[in-house]
Image (cartoon, rainbow, N blue to C red; front, side):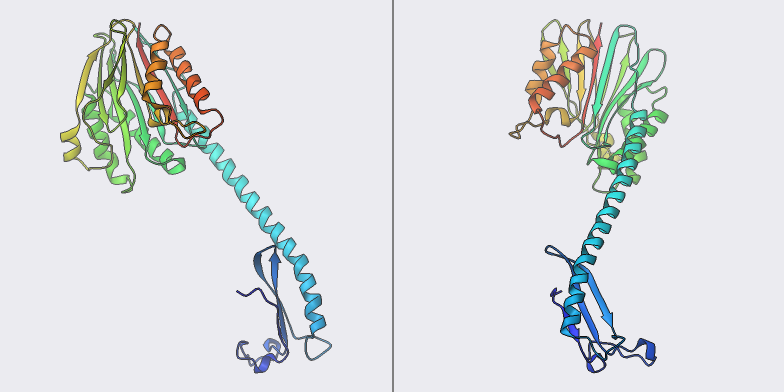
Length: 334
């Protein structure tokens, strides 16, 4: 605690030193010095019972202190090496987790008659809690999901994997996006910690009728560009996040909205990492910038719209590290 040297010439009469009956355990004389590196004390080096003399001397402890200084450097390097080895191990495990998570995100986008679809995902850390997916429901319907798990890193990524697995198992044959989210909530709620939740938008695209149905569980509003009016509409609708309520309140509050997709119309789904991307002055990208990017890309393909929005965010943020994952999905009627 003090970092001071300690020299006890007669340890048998010092109450701080335990007394043992066995001769080989008895401490006659003792010296202790701290293992110091700069301002840190890594430990203590102790010697007992000088062989050729009855007690240790001031000269002994001076020499011992010099040896301790060298030993402290070795100990510090040892700690540093162990920490680096542990960090490398964690980095390798996180890299593996990132590769596995990337495998779970769609690499190809569905090719649907009359529609063009594209998306992107960029985690803030090695692994993240954002998620998007495309699920075939039947011959004319496709499920489109975007989600954002509270928090970041491995815990959020694990919850994301749970959501993905459940949605893939329950969406087959479903015609109601609100029922899909209600079932997801009832299945995942028991397994979520009290401080975790998931915001989700689940859409069902009917390619035959060119109708898009959306239910939002506390997620960002969908942005819909109308080619005829050249305006962007916020498609909201009620809904609370997955995991907050075990059932009745969630079901009462979930709302389903239907809208037609005319030629040239396109919808943009995004997580809050997009609108809340920050520049070097901690100013947010904002929804207005996102809408402007949509309008300037109105004649582009879905993939080009995604690229244009990403490029604008990149120019806005510069080299500023982002605090949240970035995920974007674009659905355009052709």
